[in-house]
Amino acid sequence: MPLYYLFLIAAIQGLTEFLPVSSSGHLILLPRLTGMPDQGQVIDVAVHIGTLVAVVAYFWSDLKPGLAGIPRMLTGRIDTDGSRLAFLLMIATLPAVIFGVVLKLTGLSDMLRSITVIGWTMILFGILLYVMDQRGSTDKPAGKWSLRDAIIMGLWQAVALIPGTSRSGITITAARQLGYDRYSAAKLSMLMSVPIIFASGIFLGAEVIMTADISSARDGAIAAGFSFLAALLALTLMMRLLRSVSFTPYVIYRILLGIVLLTIAYS
Image (cartoon, rainbow, N blue to C red; front, top):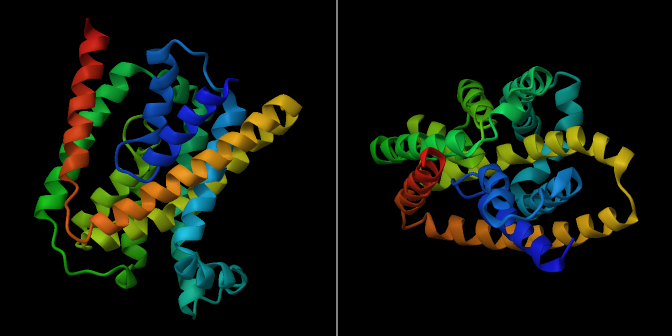
């Protein structure tokens, strides 16, 4: 695969994975709009690994206690901050895992990969993000994350398996509706991305291992490196901007892109 195309795929995945604009929607659209062949599962897994490493690196100080708390959580001892975080992340991940398996087994995951679906989800969930961002209170910090909130955000995260929805966008929307401030909403969304990206990587990786060759493995390694850099840049910029800027610019982008896609789909 040409180096420039690997860079383009990785840049799109890295820059959009954590922005509320739907990375999967952009990756589905890329080959359709450029005429290039679909990048395949090897590259999909690779760019997801790159973004996973980026979010772990950026939020390492927050994730480290959670990782250390996994053994206590697995033995039923939810008595430390770390084991509590690990437990809440697990609870928030389960709905998406279950829904993802259902979509895969029923074949709906392939049926939903259309420009029409992406266009409508871009617009509708963009408007929902705007409404919740403007109406949501801004006094609830990430440290107040509760079991109830983890369940609600987890259910909304499952909806993001519909292309164009945006995993980060829908979980940020849910967090703003629950009363978290913008920075905390984004932070919780990013922390929730770690187990779900890891789970999807394992799920897709099992198929990739059986078919990958040296050439595809090399392309994957290059794509992973590019996506790591792009994701780290996107994370850094967004988290800094949220101190003073709302989610409105992302909403405007989603609506404009959705209109363009629907125009193409219905013309």
